[in-house]
Amino acid sequence: EVQLLESGGGLVQPGGSLRLSCAASGFTLSNYAMYWVRQAPGKGLEWVSAISFSGGSTYYADSVKGRFTVSRDNSKNTLYLQMNTLRTEDTAVYYCAKGEGTAAAGGYFQNWGQGSQVSVS
Amino acid sequence: SYELTQPPSVSVSPGQTASITCSGDKLGHRFLYWYQQKPGQSPVLVIYQDYKRPSGIPERFSGSKSGNTATLTISGTQAMDEADYYCQAWDTSTFVFGTGTKVTVL
Image (cartoon, rainbow over all chains, first blue to last red):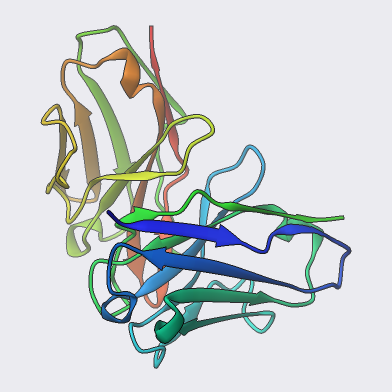
């Protein structure tokens, strides 16, 4: 069974930094693209970032480009999201999601974690 | 930037059919995906590549597309189907979600 467990969220002041982690189990992480999606309080889903199976290709939403960095350590079965220069509008639940193939581009979100709350205030 | 538009809400009686639309430019040239999100829970993929259903998703969920509009249909809607539904597509290095539709089972 695919399991994705996010951690690292919390309360941070504007301008601060946080690093989210997503521990993957039940599948071979190195075979799949991975994603981060967020949801602000009472709002809809917003895609944040994507990374290919090897980490060689990454993509970012315009709203986080230059501030957030996605990475992965396949040997540790873990996905990361480094978030710098945080803004109040970054407050959201952050979900990691597993893709259906190796390429990040054009994929979709096959399995989702339970989410990690990030509050910027 | 690319946009996907959904109706904010849809109401349906138990046992009846709910139809949720998603419209966007050149949608016919893209794959469309649908996610269900129940209150306090993570999203779940219910339709991929326009009409395919992942294992474990009930047959009452179906997807279709015509021109620039895609439709998620829930046949024989049950109380457990009450949730928010989001469509999603890929456009020029960006993943785009629809505005979301709240389905209420009256």
